[in-house]
Length: 192
Length: 224
Image (cartoon, one colour):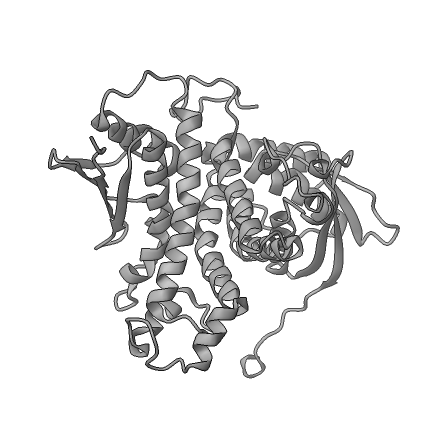
């Protein structure tokens, strides 16, 4: 599916097939979770990032079903570039009504960036003003886990991490996604 | 974007409201529970006093409940592992966290979504706001039944409580027991919402048959 077509499909699904909830409710809930984690782990932001990623991973494992059911694309992506477009233009669109930009591909087509112009999770958010959160906390780290979990369920092992965030004072919010390998279907030995 | 189609009826007065897929909220509220169990265990494992308790022997020991019933909640979340907390302590720790999270969300929600409406006349008015507007916003329907003894106790019955609506009800799977922790965050939301409207209350929720849920609100009378 071409990038343009993916964008059209995403828009169509968002308009017609998605049950919607007020965005501020989700923003508030997520913000409360992050704030509580920061408090629980006494501002050990590395640990907070880890918890958010793990939460995302578990969500991703489930979310893929929802994605496949709603997107109704009963076909594998033919390559990782197509996967990237589908993530940005269909995946993010139908869950969060945003379309991050896919960019900065490496020449081997195994690594790209998602640049977020908008991010509903981060609306109204300020990081703690303790001089460390700006350097250590990745507020939206749950996204990395979601991508990792969801793609693992469709035979792709990826690594994802943020490299910049406007909440930290950077100019952009950018996530780096790398394909590690395609996971072979592994059948139980006695089951051939 | 949000102008393109008629949006859900809640908060219709706010034309700038933006929307996300309901799945986002569902996923967060589901995953909140196992995460809280995880965090409670990790914090417990790293706190010095609890390791002290363990060296005293984790059988018999201090707290009220014995070890024999402690498997119930652990199986409910599937995060067993090496546990130091006994069942009651674990339940309390997780309840405290989830309820607290909900409380903050409830506070924020009322602040935000009761902004443009007239002042609440009395407690019943506030409770009705919870049953209608707040429930609609968070759980996408209204409460089915509201009862009160007119002495500060309110009982809210939702026959199809959204967070429980897709849970497995496998007989013998102790579904009701396993669903219990998923009511703690909503409890906090209700208590927080009431607090934001100036009403101190305790809120308890239980389910006897999925996907129904009953919330009991006991308001604390203001000291004269």
